[in-house]
Image 1 (cartoon, rainbow, N blue to C red):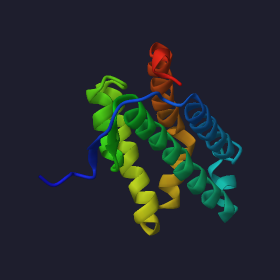
Image 2 (image 1 turned 90 degrees about the vertical axis):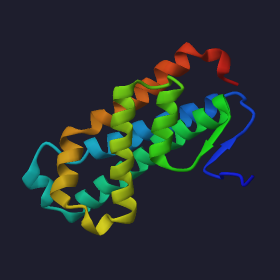
Image 3 (image 1 turned 45 degrees about the vertical axis):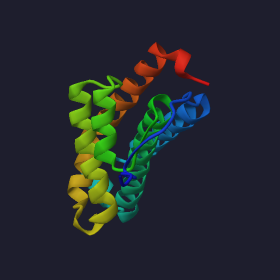
Length: 158
């Protein structure tokens, strides 16, 4: 029987405290970079094209760290290897790491990351501004859900 490389089952181990801390720190750092931009002043934001470039990079990197952490929890904590970002959300929900609501949000974030990476030329700067001005808490919500699960499963940490 062929092996599905997108859904390999491995032996569960321990979630790395260092990986958790590093990814959460990276997420917070990227969100801080975005919040240092004039995201509360539309005119000021668009007056310098570097603002949208910085916002895009910070947002993409924060999302990547969020998904990297989810993938790490799945791989080390449960022995599941997944490659697709939407699959990370689905598996984390199935394993009760995140709620149904958080999984739906994480799937939306996966779709947005996909657009930033593969369809970057279609991401409108106004849309990017709106997300950075109003939706960064979505990323923080998922990071907090991870932290909550980790806090309830300290025995799963190395």
